[in-house]
Length: 223
Image 1 (cartoon, rainbow, N blue to C red):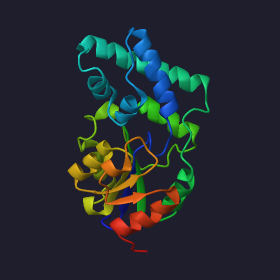
Image 2: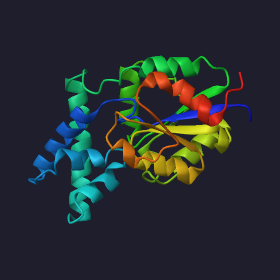
Image 3: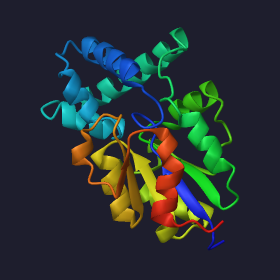
């Protein structure tokens, strides 16, 4: 299996533009606790972290019980918003086409490493017709928060791909730091939730059409 390559996708801010529903769910969660929500830039800066870690960053002075209530309120609000409005959280332009192009390559496997819960990821994949597309799906339920490399190391183990033949696609410093900790290469996107110049990725892309070429550049073209 040493000839296989692995492309690992982040979800929020990379595949899916979920900022509208994230902001709406955060508004409801903070409102339920009677708290003032941080500004938009601060909220989006924590996208990619597990929820427990995200609220630790956003509310460092809140006690553990209050942060647990915020997490629960956010989850409930997020799922309700998803149920009420199926148009929230669209894929970024060109995402489906790039995924299809990579899937067509016999030596390329696809994976997901996301701060979403299992339930949250399942909803996204179902909504966009991506159920069963990824060979490995790593979610926040089973791992420490990014940038801990646990999700990537598990994906490599599940697929049998060597680190030097794997690449992480993401929009945040958490994605890039996680990949570097796991010893794999990085592709950053310019359309996500962290400033592109903070990512320090091996390659930056401005459009999903550039993804297959960036993958070939970093982890080889052997077809």
